[in-house]
Image (cartoon, rainbow, N blue to C red; front, side, top):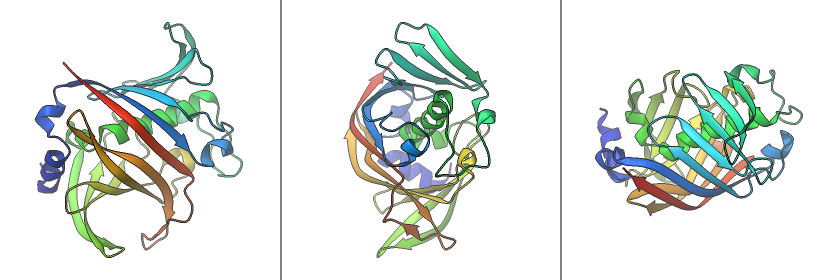
Length: 245
């Protein structure tokens, strides 16, 4: 395991402790103009998210109506909309293949299954980082440090296998002197691979593990400099509950 990754895992609660976790439940809200542009304003204003920390399974409640939830599973990828008592309403197998391209930020609309897939895959990875980096098939490599706003951050390149649904396969994560994540760079396939600089703030400890509670998604230029005056997507986490087996 990469030495930087070892330090990051230890700082966030330890991989041995994480391996004992059976379920995570988070209460959060997603904001920003991105959702209205897809045709779904205020869809994620108040959400309960429940996930399996070791296998990509995640649900959002409520989803589009008070009695409905969305559920993502992988192997194969399957996104579904169900009632709270488990009755299937809609589903899509291999949903990534359904997204309309080319993507135009101002006008491309998504159906309910597409927006559910995009958000579910993203948040499962956000809420399981950095421990997902230690899963089988994930490759990591430390890069040269990065200086920003008078700070020096260590960087970790992470390459995800096809078995983990994510924005795109190769991403870069930035960590401060306390080994807390401060930024992540990626280029979502389903939105035309824009250069994203995603900043994480206000780290708090829940159940012995550290989670950022404020996220701001920006774009960066060719030099890696982010435009932090505009955030198309925001995320605020109020609480996280950790259950152990």
